[in-house]
Structure formats: C-alpha cells, structure tokens
Image 1 (spheres, rainbow, N blue to C red):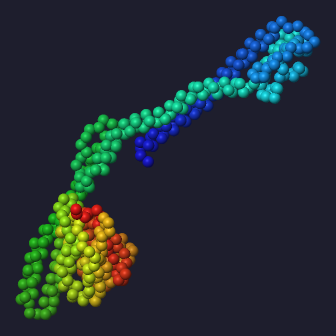
Image 2: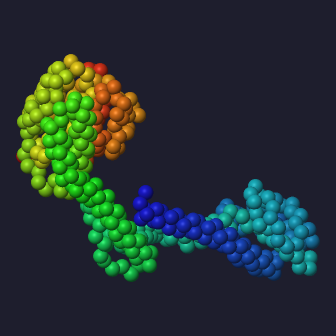
Image 3: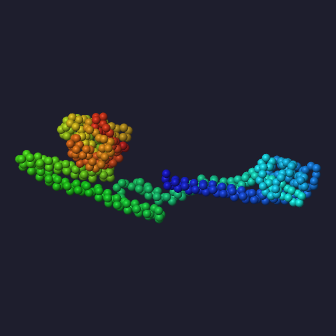
Length: 437
C-alpha cells in the first residue's frame, strides 16, 4: 500500500473515531441537559396544577390523554380532584420529589409536589427524553457525517500535495538507467526529503567509484597481460623447434598448454568487460540466429569431429534485433560447453523455435548433466562444474557462463537449465519482443 493511501486511511479513521467519540460524549451531555430542562418543566407544570381552583365533588374530573406525553393527578385530602384517564384513580404512593418508576405500562419520570392538603403527581415518559437527546445529537452530528466523504477527498488531495517531492523522487529513480550515477540535481525545501537526496547522491558517488574500479580493473589487467603472453608463446614455440630431447620437448609442450590456458582466461576477461548492456543496445541491427549458429558450428566443427560427436541443427530461422558479436559469443560459449562435457561419440542437438512474440534457441547434449546445486552456481565467475577434476578433463577459466549471463541481460532474455532427454543438459535461451520489423 502506498504512503498516500496509508496516510489518508489513518487520518480518515482518526476523524471517524473522533466523530464517534464526540457523538457519544454529546449524547451523554445532551441527555443530562435534557433531563434538567424537562425536570424543570415538570416542576413548573406541577406548580401550575397545584394552584388550580378545584373543589371536591362526587366524580373526579378525568382528562383523556391518548398521547400519554404528560400524565398528572391532583389530590386533596386523599381525594382525587382531577387526573389523566391513563392513571389509576387510586392514589399512587410516591414520595415527594423526582423519581423514575413504571407507570401506566411504561417507564416514566415522576415528580410529586405537596402544598398544604393538596398533592400533585406529574409523570412524563422517559422515551420523550431519549427522543429529544437523539434529535439534538442527530441535528448536530449528521452534517459532520455527511462531511466525511468530502473530508476524505480533501485529505487525499493534501496528502498527495505534501508527498509530491517524494513522488517526484520515486519517478526519477524509476526512470534512471542502471549506469547513471549522476547526482539528483534539484532543490527541495522539505526537511524530510533533503537529507534523503543528499544521502542518495553520496551513495551514487560511492557506487560509481566501486563500479568503475571493478569494471575496468579486470579488463585493464587482461589487456596488459596480452603482450607478455604473446611474447611467451613465441619464445616457447622457438625453443620447441630447437629442442631435440624428447623430455625437454614435453616440458615445453606442457608450458605451452599453460600459456594457452592463461591466454584463454585473458580473452574471456576482456570479453566479460566488453559485454555491458549500455554499450551494445544502441548498436542493434537485424541478425539471423540460424546464420550465426551455422557460423559458430563451422568454427568449432574441428573439436566436434575430434571427439566423433554428432551435431544437428533443427527449426526455422528467425531474425531479431541484436549485435553479431554478442550473439556469436553467447552461442559459441554454450556450444563450447556442450562439446567439452559431451563424451566421445556423443550427441548435440540445437533447436530454433518461435511462438508469437517469443523466440528460443536451445541446445541439448548427451553429457553428464548437472545437479540442482551446480545449476544454481554455474553463473558465478570462475566456477566450473567439478573444477579441473571434472571427468571430461577439459580445462577452462570458469567465465563462460558468467559472460552468457551478461549477454542475456543485454537482450532482456531469459535462460533455462534442465535435464535433457539425451541424458545431459538442456540450455534454453528465450528472446521476447526483440524481433525486428
């Protein structure tokens, strides 16, 4: 839930709760005031009735009162002079003053006044008092209840206005590119937002420093290593041509293999440094996945033939917006892994498929496959399944799948690893929404 909604609900809830408490308090206070007013009214009525010039007679005057809003009796020397027809002719024994009792089948407020030999009983239903209190409360609180929706609109508007700087900051961060570490350059006067912007700018500066240091260190180091490695290769090759001793020749051959492995690591590190999304997306053009795959297979066919493996390419061609270098590197790394970890006389199948706006490139092999733990770690830099002790005996730098993951990020694609029906590993790369017009 957004801060705006949360604040609106909290403020509105507090207002409704406050109105409810005010309603309860107002009801209680209105009841007290109403009781005092109506009690005074009963006193006045009793005072008027007790002064009435009534004489004793055989039949008392009975007053019909169907509404029963006010009942009375006037007694003199235990004889009823006059009274409401709803009341019994027998004198009701009440003590002088106010009391609440059941009279004429309902709860009433009773007032008794005595003067000389005359006694007056005045009774009023309690429901009249409740109705009066409710009428007062409703007349006072109903406008407030009607005002709650209007207040909700006003509260929502002003909360939105107050949170506008935070909303603006959120939108700016949402549209910012991953490699954009420039400071947030706009002035705010809000004391709550200004420290946030200052801390973010400081964080951007530190992250940029760390990002550049990490990004350029490996590529710079690898670039500097290329020249001495090339020189070593030449020197080892020249020494091997001059050596006649077989043992020395084998030692130089082992040295040459080590140099080749180190050169491979250096090249992979350089590729890893070059595969950054922001550098490549602006260079996209129409690329045929089938053509690139055929080219990569032809370049690596010597390795396939050396291990007597069979490879097949299935499916229809499709064209996507992409970059030839990154796509070639992606397919070459995945095919190279399949060749390495598929045994002699094994099988490799590459499939291309399209479905609506989704396009997939898939490779299956009959190698040893991977465990679930290995699948989770395969994209870590310098991680190799089984290390150098893998049954295949293949050497590597452990950077190939890390490069694959970088290229996947460039295309906003997804990669899926599973056990293959051939017995080894299935690697499926799915491109979505990148087909050229």
